Image (cartoon, rainbow, N blue to C red; front, side):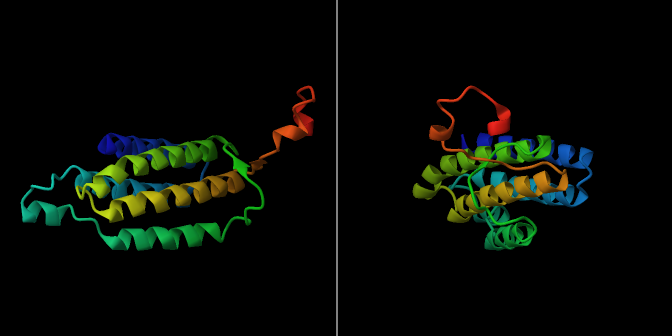
Length: 171
């Protein structure tokens, strides 16, 4: 299940990359390509059974530098968007919406790796990478919203509109 989830995530990042190219956000295209490469390494690690040869396990060993790199990317891209003041709903253009969808898929992938880590069948670095990647995808969705000139849609407490007829202007 974990390999399928991380593979789905890598494929979805490919869709995001194509959408970013269409929206003329080349810096995002480059980063998404690198993230897909990282996910290939995560998949190779997850696909390596614990009883594999030491040589094979060394070839697919998780590198903590990937987690450090993701942390730095979160800071780098996060510095380019305004601080979060309210809950942000998925949307903000097609590219941003797909990046938020990728974030959700990434969360699922992370959850599917947890049992493997607990059973000592996967390196905790794989789980940490996916955890940090989901945070980065949130930031990248916000960045794509900004770069495409869309506005972020923020959460409204349902008590403020449940007794009203639908009027988008009020939302």
